[in-house]
Image (cartoon, rainbow, N blue to C red; front, side, top):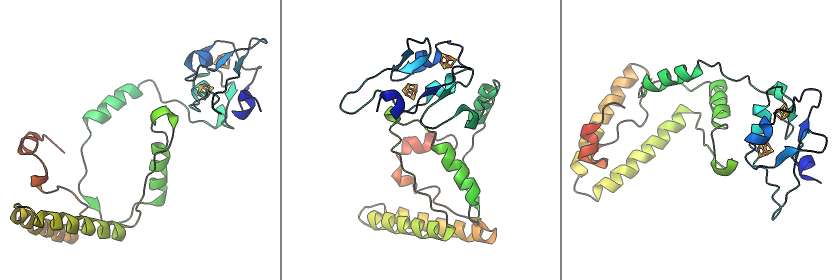
Length: 208
Ligand code: SF4
Ligand code: SF4
């Protein structure tokens, strides 16, 4: 099977305006104009690799939606964000704050699924897409895990001279958890004991 067939690369000639954007943006530099003056994937093979990074840039940059690849079609794609999105992004970053108090309830499955879909689009080196996420979607299981984490931290602290500091932290933590329970908020592993940070970093922390 040729490189073009294995990538299921198809150009709709009725839509292609031969602008060359797919060629310019191809990460693997494997697209070129063919003898028919339409883009095609060049034959390339080294150790079984065809030179295509599977990035789908070719599909995304085509201004007329003429390219399909890996059974992905332009008509099934999300539309690009509006131009003012750059300004929104800046506001989003500047206004970001960490949330350390959560409702004492499980996150809706559709929200988790939406987040996972967005995370699947995160860049990975060489488009390897070998990042795995573990989702714990049960708040009681989350509680089990942070209790294990605290028990492990305590066991480690016992071996150091800062154990009393850790005990003070646990007292404070248990009191916070008790108050959170009264207000029906969950208390997920926040504010680790300060002795795990250097003093300098601790003093210069502006916000969470
Ligand atoms: S998926 Fe990426 S590397 Fe493969 S042909 Fe398209 S632009 Fe080139
Ligand atoms: S980007 Fe689209 S319109 Fe431009 S040459 Fe490639 S297939 Fe044709």
